[in-house]
Length: 282
Image (cartoon, rainbow, N blue to C red; front, side, top):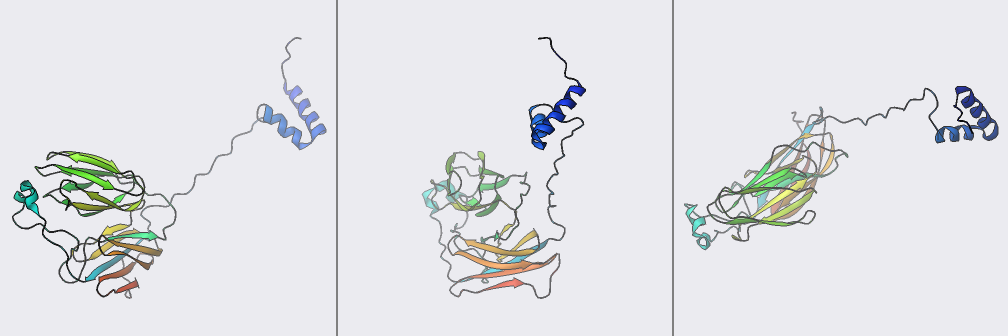
């Protein structure tokens, strides 16, 4: 049979026949099996709006953590490694309770636990760092973003290793046998907290809080903390300490203002939750 070219007249006749025999369904089937209708164009897909970060109306969460109790810290037996002993002119103490001696508690990890609207945040491009220095982990408590690179390094002229005990992320155990050695790791899933050990020196511990948002802080010896760029809203704030346990507080952050949180640990449990009465501004 000779090849017949499909002309616009033939297409129009077929379209008319399809409508007569099958109605609108026939027309849809005709174009589904062949080319799209003449002059048809794909409908552009609207992109989802992206909220700016940090938000223009952001405020802060600030506070202070107190402690009313004994100090259980003791001197580390540095004689177990003469190299460690040579790195210190005085005693090296454990860091179970760190403060300013005036009832304030340092090394507390404070973070927004609930209340944030769903969104993604840009991952920091700069590395976080933990140094094995003076036969101790520095810093002792660290906040880290999920997916952010964490650099472990050994600054001591003795052998160390990093043993990470995890729940949500893979565990690992890496050696750092010489001063100047280092390696990089990332934790892809949020986890409060990852525990770090050095099996060579059992007093060496550190803790890493891994979050998928940037709203966290570690208190200094004065117990104070500040979390900036917080969108207006009401939040549950998590407060974590390695030996005293966890607390929660609820705080509301108004536009451009400061929500204050205070939590106490120790013999007398105290705490206050809420905003500043004088409406501190950024």
